[in-house]
Image (cartoon, rainbow, N blue to C red; front, side):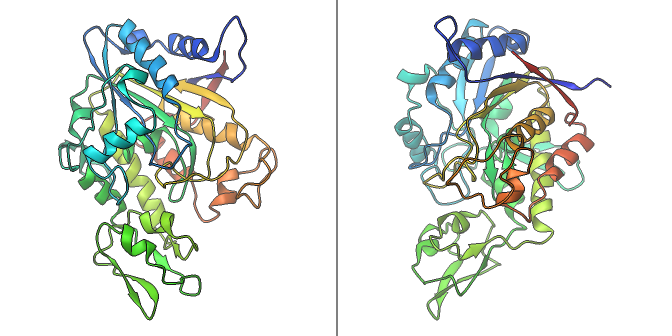
Length: 369
């Protein structure tokens, strides 16, 4: 079988063609007009960024996608689901406020925002998939109800999957609160006692009241913990860490099966963009973002969710690392940057498994525009 097509634009621009015009050319060659039929409701799935984080995709790019969808005759809306952890996107009210404060107001993006899983994250559709681990997936109802899905992902590192791209934007990003709990439920962080100073930050941010102080050290109750990872992100002393075992591979497989559920019923009605810009070492969920690990690369688009993530990770790894970042190893061209950040995470699991269950192909042809 022939490799999947992945289309790429770099960030060079001129008076003849600015970067926004290049994004239009990218969508043209990917045949967005065939994906978006007239009068269709089009979900543009993105991450609005946690308050204080600045690595998320600039709203002006999202507006360009919105305008293109409207030219195709579709009715676009921006969407995401509420978070499992305690933050500024845990319910639809604070989620909408955060999105607007981060620049995604209607006046900027020219489209409404609809949080796909309702006010408190409990508006979900049960999608039967009968996969190896997940039999029925809990997906944000308005994403399921949409006629078309366009995933717009900020490509970056991730603490549990090595990197986060299209597959994570679909699998974790489109799950309702119950679906997120299913994916995270086998992960329970551990506290490195010698690093813990008993500051209480993790206790304040734990949505499940699963953390307490004992002898001035944090202790996590595994019976209450849902594995959302908020405490890992929030600890200022790096005292809370993932319990590395078979959990991380299982998490990746669950995430992929959820992505499979999201795309069920949307054959020929889905497209995927990855923004390889401000490539931060961690996800956009904490209230900060560390320095980018490599230079900005460009934007890629495909109809294959596996190929686009494979191409993205290959392009990042082909770069030489920037100075003054968290990367302490694997800095050279061709070296695995994500393994350098998370040495115990095998990010190939998500790609291998997605290919295995028929979501796409790791083999791709990169077409540079």
